[in-house]
Amino acid sequence: MGDRLDRLKVLYHYLRKVRRLPDLAQPRTFTEKVQVAKLTWRSPRMVALADKVEAKKVVTELLGPDWVTPNLFAGPALPERAARDWPVPYVIKCNHRSGHNIFIHDEVRDLLPIERQIASQLKRPYGGRLAEWVYSQIRPQVLVEPFIGGFTTPVD
Image 1 (cartoon, rainbow, N blue to C red):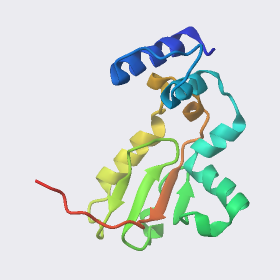
Image 2 (cartoon, rainbow, N blue to C red; image 1 turned 90 degrees about the vertical axis):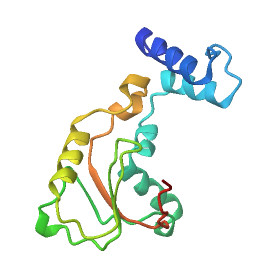
Image 3 (cartoon, rainbow, N blue to C red; image 1 turned 45 degrees about the vertical axis):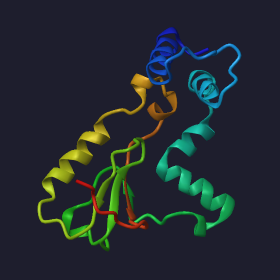
Image 4 (tube, rainbow, N blue to C red; image 1 turned 60 degrees about the horizontal axis):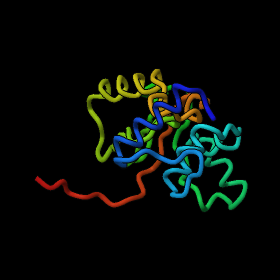
């Protein structure tokens, strides 16, 4: 069931978040089953579904393009600045990470911080400290999509 270090990582993080040890031998709750999956499932299908770019291809093939937010761009790095003619608002993210989205609401004057942030995210693996094998199998890419949600005003 996964290697020993991954098992210890799963136990530690689960205990920290849920305040009890998971039953990995006979998982009953959904969260326990997720922990077992992180340690045991090794399927190329999982990799395709965890990769934000590849998952769109799978969903399009199964359900059609109407079920997928279209890509404005997908590639190994941000394109040259002159090629970034995406309609505002849009979202920049990496396909192998979670929770590191950059929301562009208006025209951006200083692109350097965004470029540095994306370059840094592309270099860093995701999920390793949580024993999430699947993320280590994804070839990092930049993904740009139109923003399709509503904006909310931050509360002070």
